[in-house]
Image 1 (cartoon, rainbow over the protein chains, first blue to last red):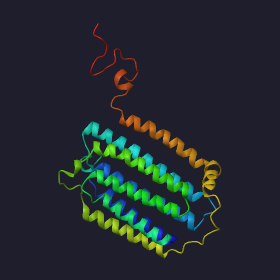
Image 2: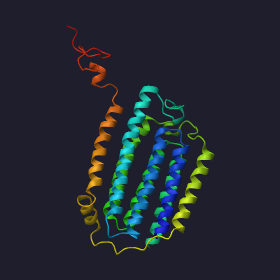
Image 3: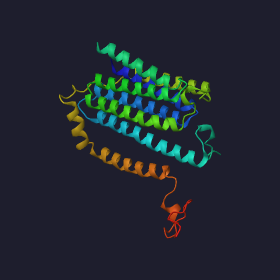
Image 4: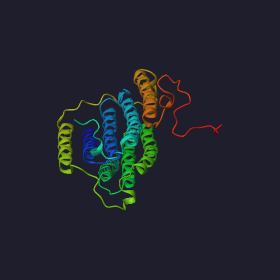
Length: 101
Length: 186
């Protein structure tokens, strides 16, 4: 286990999350891609804390912030999905075209 | 030993993360994502971050349980009974993702990272506790305001009809404009 190995793992998780966010049709699945990208941030922040500056709390606080961002993303994402579905009966990203053009 | 555990957890996190977007049911995808999060929590435990590792595991298991409810509400393919494609633009998405991974991994391996500054403190949980109650308090105060805004925003977006729909912009419409009138008809 080393800083490089952890950062490569974080890069892999971020790339998979990006793939999911770009390739999934369902809005809920798109949000799961975003969650996976934030998951990568947790790994990277923990790795930097342990291998670069374990004397300072910055890395640990960053992990807490990322965990909070995850919950906020979930809550507001589902609220937006509910609002969009209620007004337009849309559940796919391809059909959510209100703001296009 | 640590290396073996780390390798197992890392492979588990990546494989289950990829499975999220390959399985044909959104319920299975939720469980795959939960496994990926638990593996990342385990990696935090390997980094001596006992408190944060447990927080990640507990929070993400709960979050996936809540997610499963919404997943069922908006499921495209209930129980995997209807074979269908849930993807669009797969080839381009894959090439963008692989390109991102190559660039980030090259950066991780080629950059000359700084040396480690001192050993971890004796009590790591105390460090984060004193951090958020001391030098890093501003970030926690910011988070609390953002979470309050999130609660308000989610309620406003999620509510079908609010009091302004019922009572008008000046809140003075009487009787309230309800689709089904209340009262007992007297």
